Length: 216
Length: 252
Image (cartoon, rainbow over all chains, first blue to last red):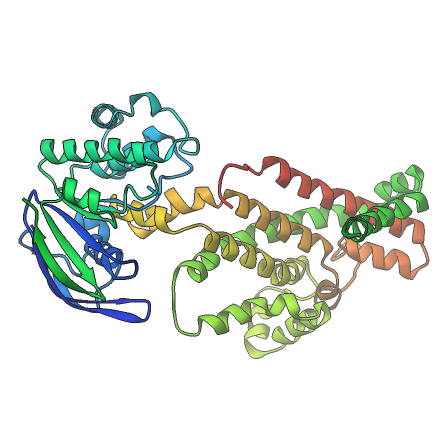
C-alpha cells in the first residue's frame, strides 16, 4: 500500500501542493494529466528521487519520506528506459542483485527467469546500444523487477514506441498485472493505455489531483 | 570560402612544424639526446608531467562530480574561481606561488620540506595550471552524462558512491582520458610559473621548456629547435593515444 499525506513538492518554480492519495496493494493506478502537471514529479518523489517540501509518504506501515531510494525497494522504469550503457543486457538485469551481493549462480537463474517472462532470452548477451525501443523497455522492466519489488513505477514507458510495439507492450504489462502480485503506478498521456491497464486513474491538473476515477 | 579559411589554420600548424623540421637535422636531434643536461630535462619533464597528470585527475574527478551533480551556495563563485588559473598569465601564477611560500604557513612548510627551487615546485607549478583544465573537462563530461541512469541505480539499491563508481565513472571514460591528456600536455608545455617558482637550474629544475629557453638565450637555436621537436612529437603522441583508445560507443 502507498499512502501520500499532504505532499508538497517543489517542481521548477511551482509547488505541487496538498496531494493526498492512497494506492492499495496489487492495484494498477495510472497517473494522467498534461505535460508539466506534476505527475512525473510525484512518481519520482515516491521513488525517493526528489525530496519533499513537506508531507509524508508511507509504504505499507512505514513512513519512508526521509528514506533514500535504495531503502524503498521500488522498481523504477523511466521514460527512455535509461539502461546502463556500459553493461550488457544480462548485466543490466542482474545489477540490483549484484549490489545485493547475491551469488552469480542465483543471479543467472533470476536473469534467465525474467528473460523468459519478458521474452528477451535472445538479447541477453547483446549490448544495449543496438536494441530497439520496445526491447529496451523490456530490459528496463526486467531490471526493475529483478529484486522482487512490491511496487513498480513506470514513467511513460510506452510513449517512445511505435503503434504495434505499443500493443505488444500493453499486452505484456497486462500479463504482468495478472501474474505478479505487484502494485503498479503508470504515468501516461494515453487514454488507450489508461483504459486498457488501469484499475484506477488519478488525473492531475496544475499540481493537484482533479479526478480519481475507478475503472471497471 | 569557408573551406579556405578553415584549411588555412591547419596549414599554418603543419607549416610551423615543417619549418622547425627544416631548421634542424637528425644530427642536431641526436646531439640533443646525447647531452646530459637535456637527458635530465627529458627525464624530469616526463616524470613531473605524469605525476601532475595523476594528481590532476585525483582532484578533477571528485571536484567535477560535485560541480556537475550537486547544487550548493556560491556554486557560481566557485565555478569562476576554478577558471582563474586558466585566465591568469602564467608568470602571475609563478609569482603568486612564490609569494604564497613567503607567507607564514608557506615558510612553515618550507622549514620542514624545501619546496621553492626544487623539483617539488616544478610539480606544483604544473599542477596549478594543468588541474584547472582537467577539472573543466571532467565538469563538462559529467554534466553531459544524463543522471537518469544513476537515479535508476539508486532505486535498484545503490548508494551514491556505488552509483558513481558503477554507473557514472565507466561512462566518463573518454572524458577522463581527455582530461588526463590535457593535463599531461599542459604540464609538458608549462614554462612561466616554473621559471619563477622553480628557477632554471641545469640538472636540477630544468624541464624541456626551460631547455628551449636556456639554449635560445645562449644563441644555440639548433638545440632549442631540436628540443622543441621532441616536445611536439611527445605531445602529439599523447593526443593520438587518447584518440585511438577513446571508445566511441561510451560516454560523450
